[in-house]
Figure 1 (cartoon, helix red, strand yellow):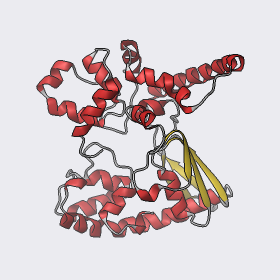
Figure 2 (cartoon, rainbow, N blue to C red; figure 1 turned 90 degrees about the vertical axis):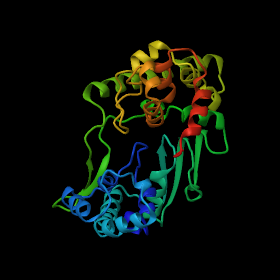
Figure 3 (tube, one colour; figure 1 turned 60 degrees about the vertical axis):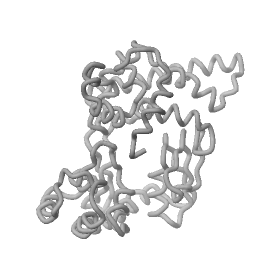
Figure 4 (cartoon, helix red, strand yellow; figure 1 turned 45 degrees about the vertical axis):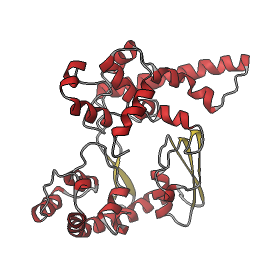
Length: 317
């Protein structure tokens, strides 16, 4: 869909932008440009490839967009053709349900834009809409912008940790292609986790499934009303006051979607006292903030409230 962009901001609204300093070079790679073409673009623009795209002036953004767009348009139009071919192999038509953990309905929105003739409905564990455009046909079980906001506040304080329970250990979809026989297929990226970390994720998910099966037997006996508040209660207690044992177990889990490879802080309290900017940067980039804070402060504190306070310093929230 990037070929429909009219400006650099349109491109940034479409691609996955990490919170860490998102550079011009990061953006070009996210658009799936060949390295040869990236080098050509970087050789003719005035900006430094390591400049943050959000720090560029309107004039710089326009000049960069004018250089980048011809390359993006060619790839993007081909990819729209390929994803149509790929999904049509699975009779992707009529009324369609998209099921996902959450949060912004990005996949559903993109599919609806490509397949305008279809009626696509979204089912999510939690939904957090960013823009009015994203108010498509959807519903969420745990929370949305108008429902159970306190649950949203807790889950979104540690989305990486929450997503661990649903995370695939396969590589993400990079692009779509067509073989010599005309069949379309998905090209996957390398897995984001190490082999050891993937084993830990699978063990965690198996333990969660075991708990659900055992709880279901208990529920048959005592008839618990399984509403969204009941389902989130244990996670709420877990994330508000993480134990030292929890920190120890999660220390080795790796996440490569941010510059830090861990949910746990990499330095001591003393280190951050001397380097407050490092603390703020690592805190804002971390996807499991209560785990991060507990690993630094060690104390049994109301971490969700602390997170709410510290988020006031986040200019990108």
